[in-house]
Image (cartoon, rainbow, N blue to C red):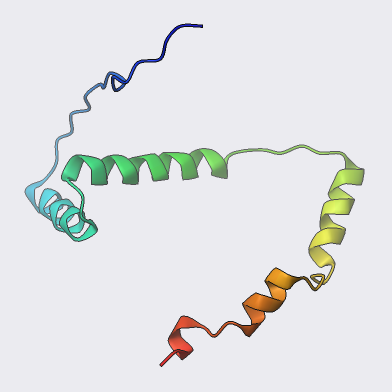
Length: 96
């Protein structure tokens, strides 16, 4: 097994042409999020890429497994401590 290194993985660059008003919008949003422009844009692009791929993911299961899945969705939740604790907890907007 090769020893692991503490060096960060190499990075590649991505160059974009952008209108000044859009760059300003991104910069304002990045500042509000406490991020620099690069981190803000990369996070947004990564999230959009994951969503695009997940939207096109196809799951195939047997008819029996699908019927069991539907039955579990239709079944009422079974009482348990976590559910009971959640139901006793006041919503943040109810707290004074």
